[in-house]
Image (cartoon, rainbow, N blue to C red; front, top):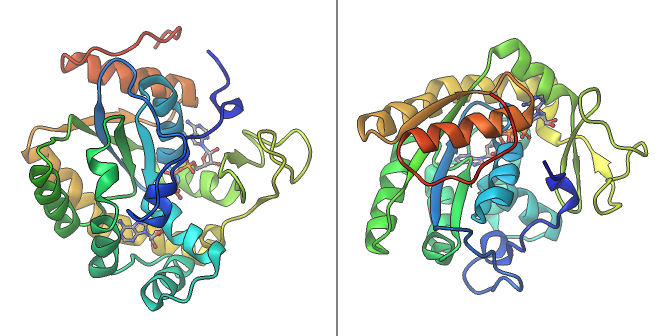
Length: 261
Ligand code: AP5
């Protein structure tokens, strides 16, 4: 399989900055328009799978965490976003009203013909029900919600060892996926650093927040018969193949991957 990290990530200007901005290179749907939610605890590999699935399906990977980090990078003074980043740094969930306002301001991405892969949203049942309302307003529906699962010890190991390119957000890991040159992104040459919320205290808070609030979102989608569960314990390519296989089992026309699962 091609190294998707060597491919340019989609321009996500609208998503990162709001509806007043436009993507310069919008993604193009491959085969059909996919609208998926990726669920799972911190560190399970949602961002990694969003990039891999995006390369296969064409849909744009959209993370709410990326919006908060991008706002911080820009050094904005919007009090909601600054408050959000403080919460993020401590590992706490950002309040629903701030998150929902952000999503409201980015509705273009929900009706984009290339589709979307939502990563990190929705995280509460209030967010999930608001998303339902927005999608209905735009006459579109979710195809499926993929829930990635992994045991807690492995989650902590993935988070503590994660490093991320500050420029293109390509994910690395100090032992399982190191950069070729220490601290330099293989893909864009940007600086590779540790996320502020990947420190031990914040990791504990994030896992607790997931099990308290976000795990309920899985039940919400299970009741709608949208939930597909995938183990995230294998290599990323295998997890990708299993994700596609689960979609195929629901009758979706998925592209073939050269991977035995
Ligand atoms: P967000 O940015 O969404 O972080 P998260 O959900 O905690 O998830 P992560 O990005 O940490 O992990 P991931 O599952 O994407 O794993 P990754 O692929 O990077 O949110 C951050 C914060 O923003 C939240 O805590 C909250 O404060 C706030 N926030 C965001 N959205 C919100 C919302 N809707 N409501 C309220 N608050 C919100 O992989 C992790 C590591 O493992 C990497 O090093 C990777 O290389 C490695 N890895 C990945 N897959 C594999 C594999 N299969 N095998 C081995 N290693 C692997």
